[in-house]
Length: 198
Image (tube, rainbow, N blue to C red):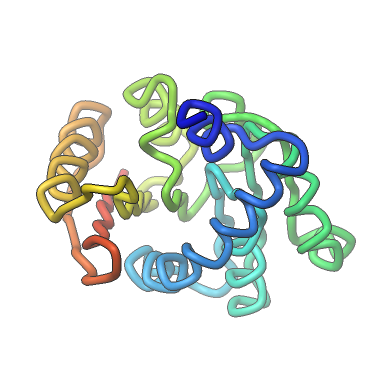
């Protein structure tokens, strides 16, 4: 049963997956707002989100920055469906493109100014290769921010800082510079946001 529930947060499926998506939307709201500040978004930026879940972050971003355009990739068909419903108007306007896939599946004919991910990094299958791909998709001096809040039952600040060390080390290996880690005190555990520049 535990494995089944874990799978629903990694690649949500069906009705149970959609319920998991609603939980993610509620819990990740403050993390999205914080991540956008850390990312240093300018109105008019071309932006990519990896692991958009039910699409709450996409909606918040496009509502707050009316001249930005955004592409989103998520490996779950259930989340793609939810995100499309949540952001139907933005898709129709041409400001948002949503596709099923991971960081390694991103196809773009233009580089991005900003790339972000909220609470999906621990579920990436090949983290280093994914960061290599994201680095290649950024404009020179573009920024990536990866935010994670540990959610396991026994989560502590130590879990958060271990994730920060893992992410910052991988960013350094994949060519990012000016790497920094910021912390935010939240329940049930401190969240971290690691940002790097191409």
